[in-house]
Length: 412
Image (cartoon, rainbow, N blue to C red; front, side):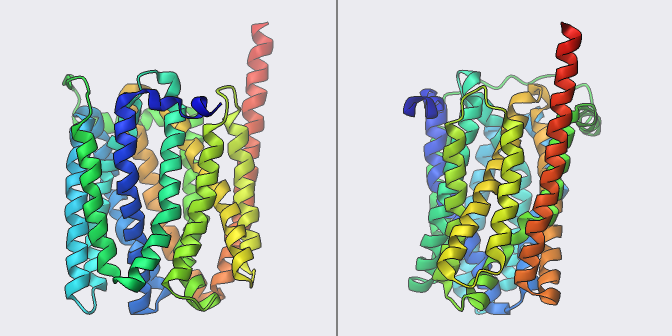
């Protein structure tokens, strides 16, 4: 069973990729934690927290479609290598800005926007490349789940380490350590053994290939529902994470370490979800798992919202994060395994477009809502909305099963 949960590691390229990404993502989450803490510590504004998220995600939304076409037209490996080098430079500039400037919020927002542009090209190339790194394509779902495990372990450790580093070394150290962490991922990419990229003829212009991607999603109901439901979640529910500095500082009267532990609880829940997903057999009904975990997310947020005790609040937050990460990971798994290879970059870029448009808008929305009705009432509302979206997933699941039953009856 243990071996089956790690079966994607049979592929050398995936092992290398996984190792390099593990260290790099730890630095990435240290940087994200430091950005949120510095912005809130210097401005004391919940709205500016939303702006900091918006600054990273909105540029990704603007350029994600172009990033998807680039991923499908050119070598995904070379695109990813370039984005990693640029991300390392961005982290280095952040470290210098925070170290030398007394008020670095403007520089942080500007460099966050730069990172958003880089991510627009990075995410489609990275997600599409995972499929190519696995020798046995039946191991792709396991590879996606292992990637999620890696991401959530970094979410668990990164914020906690960042909280300690901010207090002991200063926020600039988090950005500097993130820049250093890119050495590992760049080294792992250079060590990959991939077939030479064979350039394909592209008779259509960029806009024509973009239109093909839109038509493919429009004409594929399962993919259309996944992307549409993700948009609702990202707009109305997932921005609860942007309010964690407010919970740490105002609700629990804590420090950067308090904030790091709250973010760490989110990482712990997500890590548990990822481990759970790696253990699922190939015959598992992923639609059912995704539906159940949407309700788990909603219940977790409802319990967390007004809990006055810190340690129970961490437990409830971890429960909600379990549901959140299980659901989002299954979304990516279904896209990776059902989309035509020639369309993979464009479909993932549409996924990124919806996510990176809805999440920053949602972050601004929760920032305004928390100013008006309070942070705890806002999170309570997000939990209730998660339950309503769960009903949409349940309805879609029943319709899918009914359609499958009709096809089986007709076939017999």
